[in-house]
Amino acid sequence: MALLDAINPLGEIAVDVLACGPAASGHCPSRSSLRATGRPPFTVIVDRHDDVRFTHTVLAAHHPAAGQISIHPTVDRSDRLLWHDILHTVADGRPPRAPISTEHGSTPVQEHAAHAALKAATVQRMTVLRAHRIGWGTWADLIALHRTTGTDVTMVHHAELPADLAHLLRHCDHRILTTHAAVQALHPPAR
Image (cartoon, rainbow, N blue to C red):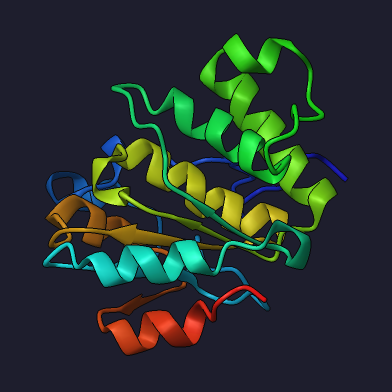
């Protein structure tokens, strides 16, 4: 079995968001091509008012030993640091068990290492905060990560969803949560 499994019938392992947006609707994959049979949906929490309770609830649920990690990412222009943050969080502060080159490696090298680390650590849920600051291409990569690792990925978007992102989500199994009660139900406090 390959480290990165295909996310659609064409055998692709990632999605180019720039080719799939409202302006290019005629070139988008079919609605069913990014559906993950037998997998829980990719979850997006839309926190339109940047309510601090959403962030506190997600952080309080962080419990790596129980397979639940919460990531407050270090966002840079390329989103390269997100993959390092994932590796660091999976390792729970210890140096990640990944090749040394991943720390300063390219985004694909870090992304590949993050996929491997999530599979090896059997992380059941990964929640990424500040998702409104993450590029759409990385969103597509995280949708692929959700599909290929068995880790349920939840993104907390602290603003209204932009049209291009809403369009991307139409092509994958997803659910959108908007209330603090729903966030609490999905992220019970760590014990």
